[in-house]
Image (cartoon, rainbow, N blue to C red):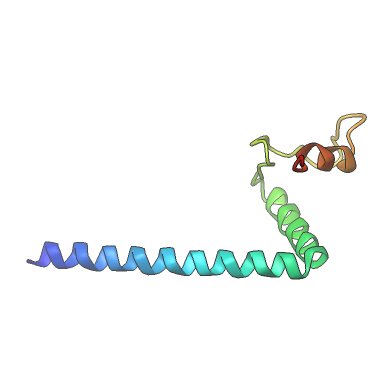
Length: 88
């Protein structure tokens, strides 16, 4: 009886957490669309703070980002952006 109640409670918590995360992700997507420059600025600040603490971020290809100041020659953000654009 007690074990079943614990399982039910855990399942309900998981559903609430999933619904909260979905709503939060939708709100974040809306904010990013409404204020793209502010979103990019905040995202870059968070990325730099995480990298200073030794945490790595993944890019769209799943590669970790090079640390600050160690960019490969010939790399530019504009060429990187065009590679990830959707083709019509």
